[in-house]
Image (cartoon, rainbow, N blue to C red; front, top):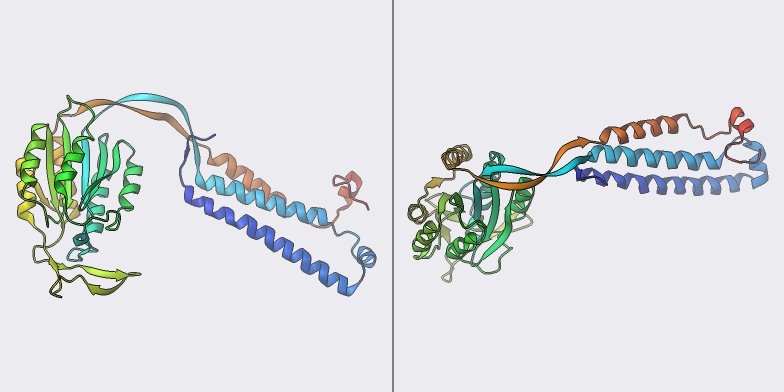
Length: 346
């Protein structure tokens, strides 16, 4: 019916409707019980000849429809006039995000993993027509999102990443690089970029040679280091509260440190560059400058053209129903008696 629903979170306001219905039913039961204690049904009819149960029910129905219309207006449904194939120029960028336990260290605020997410999100926010993909890796590499131009989906998948998503621990950067090779679907494409965000700890000695092989396939690797070279402990939390810190077999607290040398070597072998990730703005500007210097490849992408907002129709209906509810009295009115619209017995 609609090609896009912009703010789906507002659908939660529809919970107001069953609440209104329940309250109305409770009120009617309470009123009926109170009236029965006071007088019988015939007497109540004589005392309140103009009371209309049908109109009370109708008011509730109108009010519920008004809330439903206003909710749809808040969601802001949109229609695309047509689906068209457009030509775009850009670079294919794959982000490989380290989700090993060492990324929980808080030597950079709020912690290394959350800082990594912030960096990738800001880089994506500054892209124009490039395609992006996401890989998560720890002891193994896992495809999180294939190459796409849907930046909203990319950021959603990114925010769902955590250190529990991969059971095997370690830092399988080799697997991440090998997996990234499968993301680029054009054999003739030369503008392939892999951005690795990690603390550089526990990377195997063969990482540099794997990066060199990737470079031969036209993949440039840029590494972003998150953390502090002085290091920090790895907190063990429950419900956001630190219970303890990770310890080694000797019972000593493990200190994890940013290994810039390893990340630098990987970048050097793949015709890339190493960037320290402490200052987000600096990272974004440096990545933007690097991408701007690259040749762009033309590719096709399907998208809806000429999206049009449809919220105004539902907003108008909602306001009209609210006014109708206000002016729709619960009592039987003289002119309605004559018209007898509700087929009530007077």
